[in-house]
Length: 430
Image 1 (cartoon, rainbow, N blue to C red):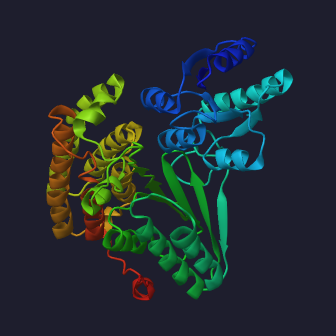
Image 2 (cartoon, rainbow, N blue to C red):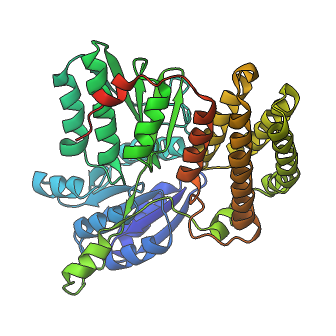
Protein backbone atom coordinates (compact mmCIF):
# COMPACT_ATOMS: atom_id res chain seq x y z
CA UNK A 1 0.00 0.00 0.00
CA UNK A 2 1.60 3.27 -1.14
CA UNK A 3 0.93 6.24 1.14
CA UNK A 4 1.75 9.93 0.71
CA UNK A 5 1.69 12.25 3.74
CA UNK A 6 1.33 15.95 2.88
CA UNK A 7 1.88 18.56 5.59
CA UNK A 8 4.13 21.61 5.93
CA UNK A 9 4.85 20.73 9.58
CA UNK A 10 7.42 17.96 10.13
CA UNK A 11 5.92 16.84 13.47
CA UNK A 12 2.50 16.32 11.88
CA UNK A 13 3.99 14.12 9.15
CA UNK A 14 5.90 12.11 11.78
CA UNK A 15 2.72 11.61 13.85
CA UNK A 16 0.94 10.02 10.90
CA UNK A 17 4.01 7.89 10.09
CA UNK A 18 3.94 6.53 13.67
CA UNK A 19 0.21 5.81 13.51
CA UNK A 20 0.69 3.88 10.26
CA UNK A 21 3.22 1.56 11.92
CA UNK A 22 0.20 -0.41 13.17
CA UNK A 23 -0.37 -1.60 9.58
CA UNK A 24 1.66 -4.08 7.56
CA UNK A 25 3.02 -3.57 4.03
CA UNK A 26 2.93 0.22 4.05
CA UNK A 27 5.33 2.24 1.87
CA UNK A 28 5.19 5.90 2.89
CA UNK A 29 6.44 9.05 1.21
CA UNK A 30 6.24 12.67 2.34
CA UNK A 31 5.61 16.08 0.80
CA UNK A 32 5.98 19.37 2.68
CA UNK A 33 3.74 21.47 0.41
CA UNK A 34 0.76 21.26 -1.92
CA UNK A 35 2.93 21.90 -4.97
CA UNK A 36 5.39 19.15 -4.01
CA UNK A 37 2.48 16.74 -3.56
CA UNK A 38 1.19 17.58 -7.06
CA UNK A 39 4.64 17.12 -8.61
CA UNK A 40 5.17 13.75 -6.88
CA UNK A 41 1.72 12.47 -7.86
CA UNK A 42 2.29 13.33 -11.51
CA UNK A 43 5.06 10.73 -11.60
CA UNK A 44 3.74 8.13 -9.16
CA UNK A 45 0.35 6.69 -8.18
CA UNK A 46 -0.48 6.51 -4.47
CA UNK A 47 -3.27 4.46 -2.92
CA UNK A 48 -3.94 6.89 -0.06
CA UNK A 49 -2.92 10.51 0.56
CA UNK A 50 -3.18 12.20 3.95
CA UNK A 51 -3.64 15.88 3.08
CA UNK A 52 -3.27 18.86 5.37
CA UNK A 53 -5.53 21.81 4.47
CA UNK A 54 -3.72 24.88 5.78
CA UNK A 55 -0.40 25.16 3.90
CA UNK A 56 1.37 28.21 2.42
CA UNK A 57 1.06 28.95 -1.31
CA UNK A 58 -1.00 25.98 -2.55
CA UNK A 59 -3.37 24.76 0.17
CA UNK A 60 -4.74 21.23 0.59
CA UNK A 61 -8.08 22.03 -1.07
CA UNK A 62 -6.40 23.21 -4.29
CA UNK A 63 -3.86 20.37 -4.25
CA UNK A 64 -6.65 17.82 -3.81
CA UNK A 65 -8.60 19.22 -6.75
CA UNK A 66 -5.55 19.15 -9.04
CA UNK A 67 -4.41 15.64 -8.05
CA UNK A 68 -7.93 14.25 -8.47
CA UNK A 69 -8.08 15.77 -11.96
CA UNK A 70 -5.39 13.39 -13.25
CA UNK A 71 -5.65 10.51 -10.73
CA UNK A 72 -9.27 9.95 -9.79
CA UNK A 73 -8.63 6.62 -8.04
CA UNK A 74 -6.36 7.94 -5.28
CA UNK A 75 -8.05 8.12 -1.84
CA UNK A 76 -7.45 11.53 -0.23
CA UNK A 77 -8.07 11.87 3.50
CA UNK A 78 -8.05 15.44 4.78
CA UNK A 79 -6.46 16.06 8.17
CA UNK A 80 -6.83 19.55 9.59
CA UNK A 81 -6.99 21.56 12.80
CA UNK A 82 -10.00 23.36 11.28
CA UNK A 83 -13.19 21.80 12.64
CA UNK A 84 -15.76 23.83 10.73
CA UNK A 85 -18.39 22.83 8.17
CA UNK A 86 -17.16 25.25 5.49
CA UNK A 87 -13.63 23.79 5.38
CA UNK A 88 -14.98 20.25 5.51
CA UNK A 89 -17.44 20.86 2.66
CA UNK A 90 -14.83 22.56 0.47
CA UNK A 91 -12.43 19.67 0.95
CA UNK A 92 -15.05 17.03 0.17
CA UNK A 93 -16.27 18.98 -2.87
CA UNK A 94 -12.68 19.04 -4.15
CA UNK A 95 -12.61 15.24 -4.18
CA UNK A 96 -11.44 14.15 -0.73
CA UNK A 97 -13.03 10.95 0.62
CA UNK A 98 -12.83 11.83 4.30
CA UNK A 99 -12.09 14.61 6.79
CA UNK A 100 -10.45 14.14 10.20
CA UNK A 101 -9.55 16.80 12.70
CA UNK A 102 -6.40 17.25 14.75
CA UNK A 103 -5.47 16.08 17.31
CA UNK A 104 -6.06 12.69 15.72
CA UNK A 105 -7.96 10.13 17.76
CA UNK A 106 -6.04 6.85 17.39
CA UNK A 107 -8.92 4.35 17.29
CA UNK A 108 -10.94 6.46 14.86
CA UNK A 109 -7.87 6.80 12.63
CA UNK A 110 -7.21 3.03 12.63
CA UNK A 111 -10.82 2.13 11.82
CA UNK A 112 -11.11 4.56 8.94
CA UNK A 113 -7.76 3.60 7.44
CA UNK A 114 -8.76 -0.10 7.63
CA UNK A 115 -11.92 0.73 5.67
CA UNK A 116 -10.01 2.60 2.97
CA UNK A 117 -7.43 -0.17 2.69
CA UNK A 118 -10.30 -2.61 2.04
CA UNK A 119 -11.64 -0.37 -0.73
CA UNK A 120 -8.22 0.00 -2.36
CA UNK A 121 -7.60 -3.76 -2.23
CA UNK A 122 -11.06 -4.51 -3.65
CA UNK A 123 -10.35 -2.19 -6.58
CA UNK A 124 -7.31 -4.28 -7.50
CA UNK A 125 -9.37 -7.46 -7.89
CA UNK A 126 -10.34 -8.17 -11.49
CA UNK A 127 -13.92 -7.17 -12.29
CA UNK A 128 -16.38 -10.05 -12.70
CA UNK A 129 -20.16 -9.87 -12.90
CA UNK A 130 -21.77 -13.20 -13.80
CA UNK A 131 -25.13 -11.45 -14.24
CA UNK A 132 -23.85 -9.14 -16.99
CA UNK A 133 -26.24 -9.00 -19.96
CA UNK A 134 -23.99 -7.46 -22.62
CA UNK A 135 -22.56 -9.80 -25.27
CA UNK A 136 -18.96 -8.57 -24.90
CA UNK A 137 -17.72 -9.34 -21.40
CA UNK A 138 -18.56 -10.18 -17.79
CA UNK A 139 -15.81 -7.84 -16.62
CA UNK A 140 -18.16 -5.00 -15.69
CA UNK A 141 -19.10 -3.22 -12.47
CA UNK A 142 -21.79 -4.84 -10.33
CA UNK A 143 -24.03 -1.82 -10.87
CA UNK A 144 -26.25 -1.48 -13.93
CA UNK A 145 -29.01 0.81 -15.15
CA UNK A 146 -32.13 -0.63 -16.80
CA UNK A 147 -34.66 1.28 -18.91
CA UNK A 148 -37.95 -0.55 -19.42
CA UNK A 149 -39.20 0.77 -22.76
CA UNK A 150 -42.98 0.53 -22.87
CA UNK A 151 -43.88 3.89 -24.42
CA UNK A 152 -42.46 6.86 -26.28
CA UNK A 153 -42.22 8.61 -22.93
CA UNK A 154 -39.86 5.95 -21.51
CA UNK A 155 -37.84 5.97 -24.76
CA UNK A 156 -37.54 9.77 -24.48
CA UNK A 157 -36.32 9.41 -20.89
CA UNK A 158 -33.52 7.15 -22.17
CA UNK A 159 -32.66 9.78 -24.81
CA UNK A 160 -32.62 12.62 -22.27
CA UNK A 161 -30.52 10.69 -19.77
CA UNK A 162 -27.61 10.07 -22.13
CA UNK A 163 -27.72 13.19 -24.28
CA UNK A 164 -28.84 15.82 -21.75
CA UNK A 165 -28.29 14.58 -18.18
CA UNK A 166 -25.48 12.03 -17.83
CA UNK A 167 -21.89 13.19 -18.29
CA UNK A 168 -19.80 10.91 -20.53
CA UNK A 169 -16.74 11.57 -22.66
CA UNK A 170 -17.50 9.04 -25.41
CA UNK A 171 -16.91 9.30 -29.12
CA UNK A 172 -19.99 8.48 -31.25
CA UNK A 173 -22.30 8.39 -28.20
CA UNK A 174 -24.85 10.54 -30.01
CA UNK A 175 -24.87 8.23 -33.04
CA UNK A 176 -25.37 5.19 -30.82
CA UNK A 177 -28.25 6.76 -28.87
CA UNK A 178 -29.94 7.81 -32.14
CA UNK A 179 -29.69 4.27 -33.50
CA UNK A 180 -31.13 2.77 -30.31
CA UNK A 181 -33.90 5.37 -30.34
CA UNK A 182 -34.74 4.50 -33.96
CA UNK A 183 -34.89 0.76 -33.22
CA UNK A 184 -37.03 1.60 -30.20
CA UNK A 185 -39.46 3.62 -32.29
CA UNK A 186 -39.88 0.72 -34.66
CA UNK A 187 -40.43 -1.74 -31.81
CA UNK A 188 -43.06 0.47 -30.19
CA UNK A 189 -44.82 0.93 -33.54
CA UNK A 190 -45.21 -2.84 -33.63
CA UNK A 191 -46.40 -2.77 -30.00
CA UNK A 192 -43.37 -4.69 -28.70
CA UNK A 193 -41.83 -3.68 -25.37
CA UNK A 194 -38.13 -4.15 -24.66
CA UNK A 195 -35.40 -3.09 -22.26
CA UNK A 196 -32.12 -1.21 -22.54
CA UNK A 197 -29.47 -2.18 -19.99
CA UNK A 198 -26.45 0.02 -19.37
CA UNK A 199 -23.27 -1.54 -17.92
CA UNK A 200 -19.75 -0.19 -17.48
CA UNK A 201 -16.17 -0.94 -16.67
CA UNK A 202 -13.26 1.46 -16.44
CA UNK A 203 -12.73 1.57 -20.21
CA UNK A 204 -16.15 1.02 -21.79
CA UNK A 205 -19.87 1.73 -21.65
CA UNK A 206 -22.07 -1.17 -22.83
CA UNK A 207 -25.66 -0.63 -23.99
CA UNK A 208 -27.78 -3.73 -24.67
CA UNK A 209 -31.25 -3.89 -26.28
CA UNK A 210 -33.26 -7.01 -25.45
CA UNK A 211 -35.22 -8.53 -27.04
CA UNK A 212 -34.77 -7.02 -30.49
CA UNK A 213 -36.89 -9.59 -32.31
CA UNK A 214 -39.09 -7.53 -34.59
CA UNK A 215 -36.35 -6.42 -36.99
CA UNK A 216 -34.63 -8.66 -39.53
CA UNK A 217 -30.97 -9.19 -38.54
CA UNK A 218 -29.80 -8.20 -42.01
CA UNK A 219 -31.75 -4.94 -41.70
CA UNK A 220 -30.02 -4.23 -38.39
CA UNK A 221 -26.60 -4.85 -39.94
CA UNK A 222 -27.39 -2.72 -43.00
CA UNK A 223 -28.81 0.20 -41.05
CA UNK A 224 -25.80 0.19 -38.72
CA UNK A 225 -23.37 0.15 -41.65
CA UNK A 226 -25.27 2.99 -43.30
CA UNK A 227 -25.91 5.23 -40.28
CA UNK A 228 -23.31 4.22 -37.67
CA UNK A 229 -20.39 2.71 -39.53
CA UNK A 230 -18.05 2.97 -36.52
CA UNK A 231 -20.34 0.89 -34.32
CA UNK A 232 -18.73 -1.86 -32.25
CA UNK A 233 -21.60 -4.28 -31.75
CA UNK A 234 -22.58 -7.91 -31.27
CA UNK A 235 -25.99 -9.20 -32.36
CA UNK A 236 -26.77 -12.52 -30.70
CA UNK A 237 -29.94 -14.33 -29.56
CA UNK A 238 -32.12 -11.23 -30.03
CA UNK A 239 -29.68 -9.14 -27.98
CA UNK A 240 -27.96 -6.16 -29.60
CA UNK A 241 -25.00 -4.92 -27.54
CA UNK A 242 -22.90 -1.84 -28.28
CA UNK A 243 -19.44 -1.24 -26.82
CA UNK A 244 -18.52 2.45 -26.49
CA UNK A 245 -14.91 3.17 -25.45
CA UNK A 246 -14.67 5.92 -22.86
CA UNK A 247 -12.49 8.88 -23.73
CA UNK A 248 -9.94 10.46 -21.45
CA UNK A 249 -10.01 14.24 -21.28
CA UNK A 250 -6.62 15.90 -21.60
CA UNK A 251 -6.38 18.43 -18.78
CA UNK A 252 -3.77 21.06 -18.00
CA UNK A 253 -3.17 20.95 -14.24
CA UNK A 254 -0.49 23.67 -14.17
CA UNK A 255 -1.71 26.24 -11.67
CA UNK A 256 0.38 29.05 -13.16
CA UNK A 257 -0.77 28.48 -16.73
CA UNK A 258 -0.84 31.37 -19.14
CA UNK A 259 -3.99 32.41 -20.97
CA UNK A 260 -4.54 29.98 -23.83
CA UNK A 261 -5.98 30.69 -27.25
CA UNK A 262 -9.30 29.26 -28.43
CA UNK A 263 -7.37 27.05 -30.88
CA UNK A 264 -5.26 25.58 -28.08
CA UNK A 265 -8.38 25.11 -25.95
CA UNK A 266 -9.92 23.04 -28.74
CA UNK A 267 -6.83 20.82 -28.77
CA UNK A 268 -6.77 20.43 -24.98
CA UNK A 269 -10.47 19.53 -24.83
CA UNK A 270 -10.21 16.74 -27.41
CA UNK A 271 -10.62 13.18 -26.18
CA UNK A 272 -8.34 10.22 -26.77
CA UNK A 273 -9.79 6.79 -27.46
CA UNK A 274 -8.42 3.29 -27.97
CA UNK A 275 -6.85 4.05 -31.35
CA UNK A 276 -3.55 2.20 -31.44
CA UNK A 277 -0.69 1.88 -33.90
CA UNK A 278 0.46 -1.54 -35.09
CA UNK A 279 3.76 -1.17 -33.21
CA UNK A 280 1.97 -0.41 -29.93
CA UNK A 281 -0.47 -3.25 -30.45
CA UNK A 282 2.12 -5.91 -31.27
CA UNK A 283 4.31 -4.82 -28.35
CA UNK A 284 1.36 -5.52 -26.03
CA UNK A 285 0.37 -8.85 -27.59
CA UNK A 286 1.39 -12.12 -25.93
CA UNK A 287 4.16 -14.04 -27.69
CA UNK A 288 2.01 -17.19 -27.68
CA UNK A 289 -0.62 -15.35 -29.71
CA UNK A 290 1.98 -14.05 -32.15
CA UNK A 291 2.92 -17.68 -32.89
CA UNK A 292 -0.72 -18.46 -33.67
CA UNK A 293 -0.96 -15.41 -35.94
CA UNK A 294 2.03 -16.64 -37.93
CA UNK A 295 0.31 -20.00 -38.38
CA UNK A 296 -2.65 -18.23 -40.01
CA UNK A 297 -0.65 -17.93 -43.24
CA UNK A 298 -1.08 -21.65 -43.89
CA UNK A 299 -4.80 -21.37 -42.99
CA UNK A 300 -5.17 -18.62 -45.61
CA UNK A 301 -3.67 -20.96 -48.22
CA UNK A 302 -6.14 -23.72 -47.28
CA UNK A 303 -9.10 -21.33 -47.50
CA UNK A 304 -7.91 -19.93 -50.84
CA UNK A 305 -7.45 -23.45 -52.26
CA UNK A 306 -10.96 -24.44 -51.14
CA UNK A 307 -12.39 -21.24 -52.67
CA UNK A 308 -10.73 -22.05 -56.03
CA UNK A 309 -12.33 -25.51 -55.96
CA UNK A 310 -15.68 -23.95 -55.01
CA UNK A 311 -15.41 -21.64 -58.01
CA UNK A 312 -15.15 -24.64 -60.35
CA UNK A 313 -17.83 -26.67 -58.60
CA UNK A 314 -19.88 -25.78 -55.52
CA UNK A 315 -19.38 -28.97 -53.50
CA UNK A 316 -20.03 -29.63 -49.84
CA UNK A 317 -16.43 -30.76 -49.42
CA UNK A 318 -14.91 -27.45 -50.57
CA UNK A 319 -17.50 -25.48 -48.55
CA UNK A 320 -16.59 -27.41 -45.38
CA UNK A 321 -12.87 -26.72 -45.93
CA UNK A 322 -13.64 -23.01 -46.27
CA UNK A 323 -15.74 -22.88 -43.09
CA UNK A 324 -13.26 -24.97 -41.08
CA UNK A 325 -10.48 -22.60 -42.12
CA UNK A 326 -12.58 -19.59 -41.14
CA UNK A 327 -13.36 -21.25 -37.79
CA UNK A 328 -9.63 -21.44 -37.05
CA UNK A 329 -9.12 -17.84 -38.16
CA UNK A 330 -12.02 -16.55 -36.04
CA UNK A 331 -10.77 -18.50 -33.01
CA UNK A 332 -7.38 -16.73 -33.18
CA UNK A 333 -8.90 -13.28 -33.81
CA UNK A 334 -11.26 -13.82 -30.86
CA UNK A 335 -8.23 -14.20 -28.59
CA UNK A 336 -6.86 -10.82 -29.65
CA UNK A 337 -7.97 -7.91 -27.50
CA UNK A 338 -10.07 -5.19 -29.20
CA UNK A 339 -10.96 -7.12 -32.38
CA UNK A 340 -14.56 -8.11 -31.56
CA UNK A 341 -15.82 -6.23 -34.62
CA UNK A 342 -13.34 -7.97 -36.93
CA UNK A 343 -14.17 -11.43 -35.54
CA UNK A 344 -17.89 -10.69 -35.69
CA UNK A 345 -17.70 -9.88 -39.41
CA UNK A 346 -15.90 -13.12 -40.27
CA UNK A 347 -18.07 -15.22 -37.96
CA UNK A 348 -21.29 -13.76 -39.42
CA UNK A 349 -20.28 -14.87 -42.90
CA UNK A 350 -18.96 -18.24 -41.70
CA UNK A 351 -22.13 -19.16 -39.79
CA UNK A 352 -24.16 -18.28 -42.86
CA UNK A 353 -22.00 -20.52 -45.10
CA UNK A 354 -22.35 -23.45 -42.68
CA UNK A 355 -26.10 -23.62 -43.31
CA UNK A 356 -25.96 -22.71 -47.01
CA UNK A 357 -28.18 -24.93 -49.18
CA UNK A 358 -25.95 -25.76 -52.15
CA UNK A 359 -28.86 -27.09 -54.17
CA UNK A 360 -30.23 -23.56 -54.42
CA UNK A 361 -26.89 -22.07 -55.52
CA UNK A 362 -26.70 -21.08 -59.17
CA UNK A 363 -23.43 -21.48 -61.05
CA UNK A 364 -23.05 -17.77 -61.76
CA UNK A 365 -23.52 -17.06 -58.06
CA UNK A 366 -20.87 -19.45 -56.73
CA UNK A 367 -18.40 -18.15 -59.32
CA UNK A 368 -19.10 -14.56 -58.32
CA UNK A 369 -18.90 -15.48 -54.63
CA UNK A 370 -15.57 -17.29 -55.03
CA UNK A 371 -13.99 -14.33 -56.83
CA UNK A 372 -15.06 -11.82 -54.16
CA UNK A 373 -14.30 -14.28 -51.34
CA UNK A 374 -10.71 -14.74 -52.53
CA UNK A 375 -10.32 -10.97 -52.65
CA UNK A 376 -11.55 -10.87 -49.04
CA UNK A 377 -8.99 -13.46 -47.95
CA UNK A 378 -6.29 -11.46 -49.77
CA UNK A 379 -7.37 -8.37 -47.83
CA UNK A 380 -7.23 -10.28 -44.54
CA UNK A 381 -3.79 -11.70 -45.37
CA UNK A 382 -2.60 -8.18 -46.18
CA UNK A 383 -4.10 -6.94 -42.87
CA UNK A 384 -2.21 -9.65 -40.96
CA UNK A 385 1.02 -8.73 -42.77
CA UNK A 386 0.65 -4.97 -42.24
CA UNK A 387 -0.32 -5.23 -38.55
CA UNK A 388 1.77 -8.10 -37.24
CA UNK A 389 4.75 -8.41 -39.59
CA UNK A 390 5.45 -4.97 -41.09
CA UNK A 391 3.82 -3.17 -38.11
CA UNK A 392 3.00 -0.39 -40.54
CA UNK A 393 -0.47 0.92 -39.61
CA UNK A 394 -1.46 4.05 -37.73
CA UNK A 395 -4.66 2.37 -36.57
CA UNK A 396 -5.01 -1.41 -36.17
CA UNK A 397 -8.77 -1.06 -36.71
CA UNK A 398 -8.48 0.33 -40.23
CA UNK A 399 -10.11 -2.76 -41.80
CA UNK A 400 -12.95 -3.40 -39.31
CA UNK A 401 -15.84 -1.59 -40.99
CA UNK A 402 -14.96 -2.49 -44.58
CA UNK A 403 -14.49 -6.15 -43.56
CA UNK A 404 -18.01 -6.35 -42.13
CA UNK A 405 -19.38 -4.64 -45.24
CA UNK A 406 -17.57 -7.19 -47.46
CA UNK A 407 -18.90 -10.11 -45.42
CA UNK A 408 -22.47 -8.86 -45.73
CA UNK A 409 -21.95 -8.28 -49.45
CA UNK A 410 -20.80 -11.89 -49.90
CA UNK A 411 -23.76 -13.16 -47.90
CA UNK A 412 -26.19 -11.19 -50.07
CA UNK A 413 -25.01 -13.06 -53.20
CA UNK A 414 -26.72 -16.22 -51.99
CA UNK A 415 -29.42 -14.59 -49.89
CA UNK A 416 -32.32 -14.58 -52.35
CA UNK A 417 -34.92 -13.96 -49.67
CA UNK A 418 -36.54 -10.59 -49.82
CA UNK A 419 -35.63 -8.46 -46.85
CA UNK A 420 -38.78 -7.23 -45.13
CA UNK A 421 -38.81 -3.83 -46.76
CA UNK A 422 -41.26 -2.43 -44.22
CA UNK A 423 -38.52 -2.58 -41.60
CA UNK A 424 -36.19 -0.33 -43.56
CA UNK A 425 -39.03 1.88 -44.75
CA UNK A 426 -40.25 2.38 -41.17
CA UNK A 427 -36.74 2.94 -39.84
CA UNK A 428 -36.48 6.60 -38.86
CA UNK A 429 -33.22 8.23 -37.91
CA UNK A 430 -33.22 11.97 -37.30
